[in-house]
Image 1 (tube, helix red, strand yellow):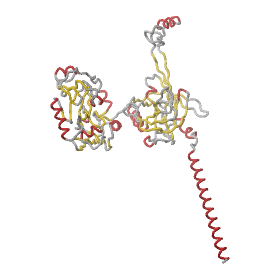
Image 2 (cartoon, rainbow, N blue to C red):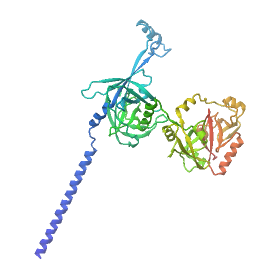
Image 3 (cartoon, one colour):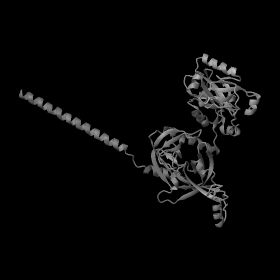
Image 4 (cartoon, helix red, strand yellow):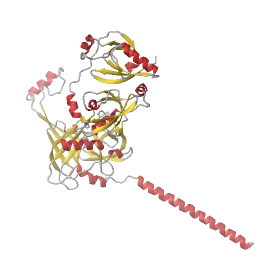
Length: 496
């Protein structure tokens, strides 16, 4: 019995010892894991990366010749009671100085090839008479400056391509894929803020796909410090690749408050390639006027959900030649689903001129594929100069429907509105300001040319389209409205 008791006691001690060892091993593993995570969480020095890529970042100084100003050189507004006083002061000190003066401006840029191509913002070099590139000297290296010439510019994306002639190959950086940048990724901004010389700031990607004001905007938002003078400089990822061109800031005081915008590299690359090859951009042109499909429009057209791009007009051009029609909803372009008008405009613009693409549209409740050979947008824009201004029609009551006072087009109204003698439709004479029509932007002088995707020229035809829509169980009626020659679709509720 004593032997058995000793055996049980020994086994119990072994179990306790093993348990203690297991807990000790587990605690050690947790400690090591915590140390590893903490080490990875600490941001390592950016100095090695900066040393590698900084030689390709440049300061840009531009000089512009400004004609002299008459009068007291803009010191006081014209007509000010102090104007005579300052004029007399100038006369006593040598008279008015109307000689041309030189104005300097500063910006940033970066080298993209060893033979001297440099990318910056268009607004940095716009109207400049002279452009001087200053290269970052590095440790112990002499300062180097070279004159640059403009290869090409693009106002729509605010990108410019410059060229310098160097005695040897230059250090350069490459573009990365901006579409892979995630919100929260670390980024580095480099440039010449406020004319202080080469400077580095770090932050993260704060947001993606920001739109400011341009048709082709695709900005990366960052909190890396960007100030005046940083314009045209690069935004780097942690691999040393350029994923954006620093272009703008949002600020109430002109200084950085942590909201900066860089044009995404995937937009910049396409522009730079065209500027390098042609000296100008060559964007694809479909030749349609479009608008987004809202929920009420989708319901009025019998679509399952809003989406795509609704064609409001098809002027002379590639789309008309291919057979696209007003009222078609573009669902797919060149094999890519169309989410909205902005996405379609960007995709068309990035497609090569002359390419034949398949366009899938919804027409009369069924899908249809149309092959369109794209034209060139720049040629179309030059041909579209001089569009007619918006006209206002005299108020003359005829009939009131859907919050609109409307009248058929007469020769007198056509003349008053500056319309062609063959123009057809209904003139909006007045709009109830408390109506849905007013909220959706309809105004006196607009011309209704279609209702329910059918042409209308009389009030009876409009009322018939309204009745047909109600009988089909639809809650709204789709109108095609023209203003100053520009068409757009508007869906108005049929419910009383």
